[in-house]
Amino acid sequence: MCGIMGYVGPQQAGPILIDGLRRLEYRGYDSSGIAVGNGTIRVQKAEGKIKNLEALLAEDPPTGSIGIGHTRWATHGAPTDANAHPHADPSGEFVVVHNGIIENFQDIKDELAALGAEFASETDSELLAHLVAREYDGDLAEAVRKTVALSQGAYAMVVMSTREPDTIIAVRKISPLVIGLGDGETFLASDIPAILHHTRDFLVIEDDELVIVTADGATIETISGEPVDREPIHIDWDAAQSEKGGYEHFMLKEINEQPDVITETLRGRLNADGTVGLEGLEFDDDYIAGLDRVWITACGTAYNAGLIGQEIFRRVLRLPANVEYAHELRDADPIIGPKELLIAISQSGETADTLAAARIAPDHGARMLAITNVVGSTLSRYADDILYTRAGPEISVASTKAYMAMLIAQYLLALRIGAARGTVDEAHARAVALGLHQLPRAVREVLSRESEVLAAAERIVDADDVYFIGRGLDYAIALEGSLKLKELSYLHSEAMPAGELKHGTLALITDGVPVIVLLTQRHVYNKTISAVQEVKARGGEILAVAYDTDTEIEKYSDTVMRIPDMNDLLAPVAAVVPLQLLAYHVARMRGHDIDQPRNLAKSVTVE
Ligand code: AGP
Image 1: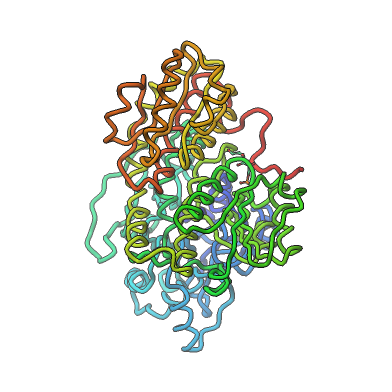
Image 2: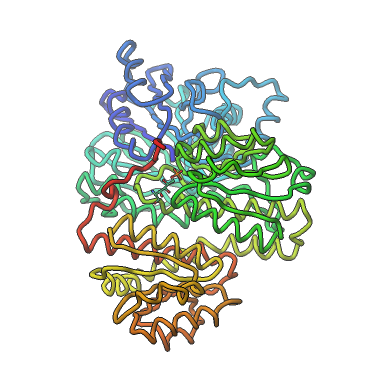
C-alpha cells in the first residue's frame, strides 16, 4: 500500500515529509516523491528507495512550509520516476498524491484525451490532478468534491494548489488517512507511525469524508459537504507498536487485514452477475475454450493456495488441472502443450524455483499466467498474463493475507474461465459472486472468535506432534495450517488426506495426540467423521474447524473453532483463518520471533 504525508505550519515542509515517508517505509514501496509549496509548487520524485529522492533534494533543496509526500506501491504502471507521485496537472498549479485504485480510470483518461489532455505518466492517479484543475472554480474543496464524484474506486487523495497556498484538501474513500494536530501546525498521513513523534493527538478520517487542512487545524465534512464534528483521539503507542498499527506483530496485523484484502482483490473485477473483468489477462475466450489442461506451480504457502485452484478448476470447471511444486516441475521435463496454461503463483514474484518452473512454459509453446503480489516483479515480467493480488506489502515472513489474496484471485480466474468455456452458468456464477462479496464479513466474524483459537492453542502448545486432516479442499487447508504451525511454533506437524490416516499414520495416534480436523466439505463429511472416530478410538484429541450449524462434531471434539455457514467451495477463505491464528498464538506462547522465524526468508531467491 502507498504511504501519504502532508504538512502545513511554520516549519520547512521538506524534512518533515521525508521523515514521515521514511517512517512509512515498512509498508513497502517502489518509488517516492514530495511537493512543496512556496508561491509555486515544486515536485521532486524518484524511482526506488527514499535515498534516491533524498539525493535529488540534497542537490536542490525545496523551500516552503506546506507540502505533501508519497511512497508508491505500483498498481497501474511500473515503478518509474514519471509514475512516482506527486502528480501535477499540466499547469503545475494543482498537485495530487493518491493511495488506491481508480476503477474507471480508462473512461476518465479517454475523456480527458479527447479534450486534448496529455499525460506525463501511466498512472490512474495523474488523472485526478487533471480533473481537479478542470473542476476548479475558486474553491479547492469543491473541485476535489466534484473530482471524487467523477472517479470510482477505493482510495485516499490529497491535493494542494497554488490557488489556495495555505490549504491541503484530503479525501478518504476506504484507504486510511489520519490528521495529526500540532501547536500551530497540522500533519496528515496514511498511518499514525509517520507523525506520532510530532503529536499524539489525532483526528481519524472515516470513509467518504473530506478534510480541509490548514496550520490552525482541520475541518471535516462529509463528501457531500455536511459538517462533521469529531473528537480528537490521543494515541499512547510506543514507536515499535506504531508501525504495526497497534498490533504486537506484523503477522497479526496482516491476518486482521484480510477482510480488506479480499475487498481490494475483488474491487472493480467482479460484477454482481458473476462476470469478471481481469485487467492483465491478454488471452481471449477462444484460447480459454481450447484449453486442455491447467498447470499450477508454486512453493510453500503459494503451493497450498494452488491446491485450492486445482480443486476448483477440476470440480467446478471440469478442466483437468494439476498443481506441482516448482522445485520439482522445473526438472521434471513435463509434457506441457500449447493448449495448456501454466499458472505460476508467487507473492514476491522472486522465488527462484518458481521463476525457473515458470520459464519452461515458452519452451513448450504454452502461455504462462502469473498470480503475484508485486507489480513489476521478475515473475510478472516473464508472464504472458498477469493477475495481481492486491494484498499490499506483506512484511511478516509467514504468508497470510497474500495467501488469502491468491485464493480470491483463483476464484476470479475460475469465473473468467468458466464463463468462456460455458461450464459455469449465470445462476452459479451469480451465486459465487454473492458468496465472494460476503467473504470479508465472514472473515471478520471468524476474527472476532479468537477466544476459540486461544483455547485450542492452550491444548497443543506443549505437544510434540500435531496432525491436520481433511478431504478435498479441507486437505488443502490442512496443509496450509500445518505449514503455518511448523514455520512459526517450530512444532512438528503433518497434514494428510483424512482417508489416508488409516493407511499408516494412525500408528502414531496415541493418548492425547492432537489431530486438527477440517469439516467444511459437506459432501465428504461422514467419511471425515470416520477418520475422527479412528483418532478418538486411539485416545487422540480432536480439535475441529467446523460450520456454526455443525452439531455432530460436538460429540467427538474437545475444541471446535467455528466458521459461518457458506458455500463449501468458498470455505477455505474462512477456514484458514483460525489455523493462521492458532499458529500465531502457539508461537507467541512459546516465545518465538513471530515475524522473522528462524531459518526462513520472506522470499527464497536461491535454488
Ligand atoms: C509461507 O508462509 C512461507 N513464507 C513460504 O512458504 C512462501 O510461501 C514460499 O517461500 C513462496 O514464496 P512466494 O509466494 O513469494 O513465491
